[in-house]
Image (tube, rainbow, N blue to C red):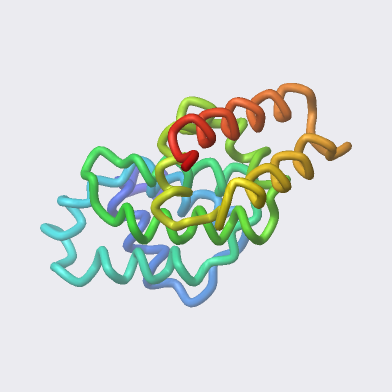
Length: 165
C-alpha cells in the first residue's frame, strides 16, 4: 500500500509509534485527527491506543495555525469523546499565545460557539474583567487582520452572552 493510500487510522498509528515528528508530519498528524474514526482505532489497535493518541496531543507544542484550527475542530468531534482533554489543550494554546489562537480560530469560525463552552468548562477567564482585558489586548493587536479581529469580537460577544454572571 502506498504511503498516501493509508487510512487516517493507519497514519495516526504510524505517527504515534514514531519517536519524533517533523513539521510536515506534525501538521498531517493534527489534520488526520480531524478525520479519525476513534471507534475504528479501538477496533484496530486496542482499547488503550486512543489514550496514547490523547497523551501525544497533550504533550505536543501546538503553535502552527492549521494545527490550532484542527485542535479547535476536535473539541466538537462527532464521537463526543475526549472533550475534556481537547478543552485542556485549547485552553493551554489560548493562554500560551492569544493572538495565534485567534488566528487559528479564524480558520474555523463556525467552531467559535463550541470554543465558548470549552472556555467556560476550563474557566479560562476568572472573571468578566479578565475577559474584557483579553478582548482589549487582542483587538488592539497590529498582528491581526480586520477579519481576524471581527472573529475575535464575535467570539468575545458570544462568550459574554453565554457565560456572563
